[in-house]
Length: 153
Image (cartoon, rainbow, N blue to C red; front, side, top):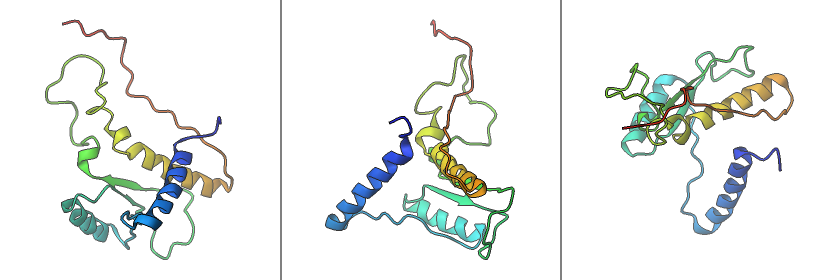
């Protein structure tokens, strides 16, 4: 299964959860909400954050509720709970020590927090819509390169 990726796993899991949900009725799978503007979205996100129920939002600043097709150049912003992504207002860590950023909890937040997966889904949708074909596109991620390093206390 060379073309099997995380989207396929999500679809299989989603179908399985829907079946389970029919019997248990305890899972809420409808997690998508839409808003006319970013101000409404921000207000809703803040209220969901208080309940620990906000994960992410996608804002398309150049599109309006009446937009019926994608522009040639699509601009979007991903807004996420700051606890699951890296803060963007810092240049370096407060307490820096030499070595690669390889701590899976602190340094791979864009992966485990879901940002990279959400960005991939949005990009896949835009690409497929603009190209009018379904061509499988692979994603390769790499942490910022760092020379070979041995931590020798």
